[in-house]
Length: 239
Image 1 (cartoon, rainbow, N blue to C red):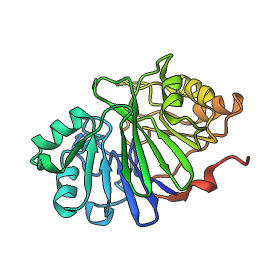
Image 2 (image 1 turned 30 degrees about the horizontal axis):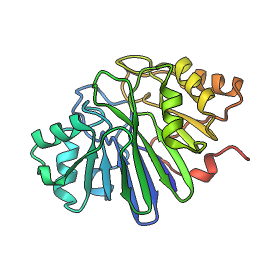
Image 3 (image 1 turned 180 degrees about the vertical axis):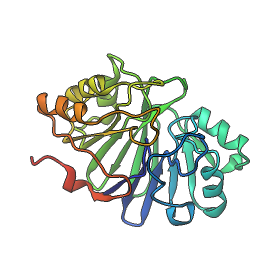
Image 4 (image 1 turned 135 degrees about the vertical axis):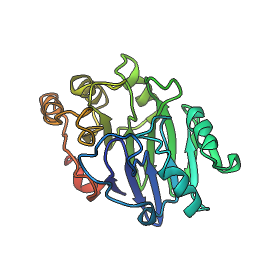
């Protein structure tokens, strides 16, 4: 499994010929100056499936997602109820949109996706569990801290997480580095990776406190570089 951070909460997961794209924000629809350019254009994306975790512009890009739908007619388009409604508003055929609820599994062979709980200003927001090639990766999406979050994630994952990709910006409905590290300490993934920072000057955070807090709890943590594709195996702590 290969992972590429495409900024903010966006990621690509490549497994064999399948490419899953999560929360692609590729435009300037938020009308906030980007600190980094989009690492890929719609024309370069070539997704097998797109999963948007909730209906906020930096996760469901109202410019890029319709263009993706038009350019890639075989691409599966997924997300919770709020995402399904927004995609339909954007002119995407409802027949193409798959609404996914917390706990529901979706097969994109060889990947299996499970919608995970999240606590955000969009009440339908979800996280995502991505399984493939014997690996298990949790993407938090946007979420506040909750005492039950780690327990709920663990109960759906049922195995130790290989990687946890977690928001740390601490504003606009997201937990900060301290709380993200608490969740990591409870879940004990083989690697914890901070995200949702570094795109907008008005909504960013320093990832180092998260990395340090994880290290203090005995959790291997590292950061990703926007646009750089990494083999998941390269990121994991030795067993």
